[in-house]
Length: 530
Image 1 (cartoon, rainbow, N blue to C red):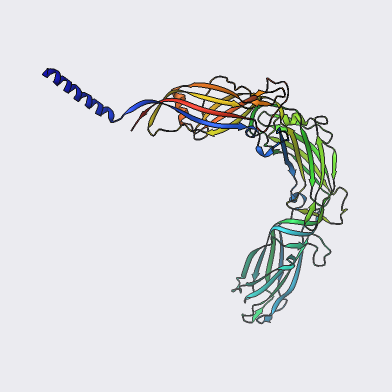
Image 2 (image 1 turned 120 degrees about the vertical axis):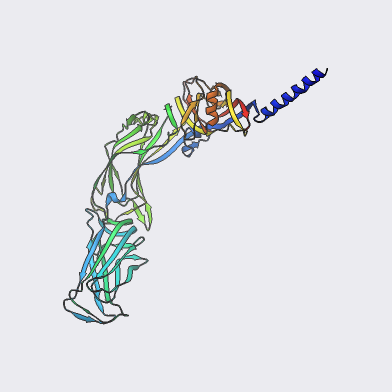
């Protein structure tokens, strides 16, 4: 009996010791059922919601308008940087007293070479004048520098500056740049009978607070007025008859940017080419090329229509005060007069174009009253209205979501598990899905499904209108290595392919259509506390 008692005591002590050693780093296996993603995908995930509108019956349509090309003001004329240089000296030595004038209201004119355009008035949006003086007079000289033809509220641009006295043969120097933004400049010259002409006036005298000074013929004053970076907000005059060749060039088109693959057939396309002219000049426009470009597939389709290469005359705009009344020219492109439907079904991400614009083809019929505002320019535009009635083949949508696997606070050794996709499909077409795991740099680390899968289409009535969502459950067995990648993923990418193959007719899309997706992880892992 004593031996038995001793054996039991020793066994208990050994068990307690072993338990203490194990309790230093306890671990256990467990299982967690965790929602990873809960999302609802609607037509907004396929097309930008900014271009979608609902009809009265809740069916959807695309309404889009965008620019193809907009002329720039410097295409019509460009005001180059110009310097007006003047030198002044007196023919004989003369003693000037304080306040005496050395230069009296000297006027200088300069004419810009703009080629054909003949400007009479500009309002400066951006521009500067640099006033630089070198004086060899050995006393301070006061200058009144004016641009009488540049005014704000009727008040001419005027600056009063004092130039330091020369010291020996070292001239006194003044150098300052002034902002001309907002000034209205009359470019008709002193006598108001010229064009493209600016003038300045200059008065200079010995500073009243200085001393009398002897000025010799060698005591030269040199003055440079440099007008730079001149860009008008408004210009008026005659802009000339010019031929402007535009392109070949291309403009981005983002309407189908979320669709990464597949084909789309549309029941109808209502497309218009528009020319809008808010400039006070007549124009003749040739659209020599318009091309739908899909850089993903490399496929391009050029417009076939009588408008290509034909002259389009568009009249000048009118103005009343600062209000502009543009003119327009509209050209409908339909399935009967063009190939616009396959151009849009090409799912373009760019439109290529080549234009020719002839300004004032009939000459100066306005009597030099052409006008232009920098923010209202002649443009070629496209507008379209497309009913979302379609046939889709492997039309592919890609979207990205954050993942929420969660943490229990310990070091986790993940084992195999399952990922279950629960889909409630409210679209009248089948969908297949693939799920990619993304790392912190949004690079794909692995995919979830290794087999083809299908989400069944919604239930529809005889009009192919959805009457109820269809539930689909997809279960994927996930290995330990793939489970660890999933646990460390920051985001997942859903790639969904839609097909209307089971329907031979065009299928309308309504505003209440959506597909609800829930991704659930059933994960086995070991927790080992540190």
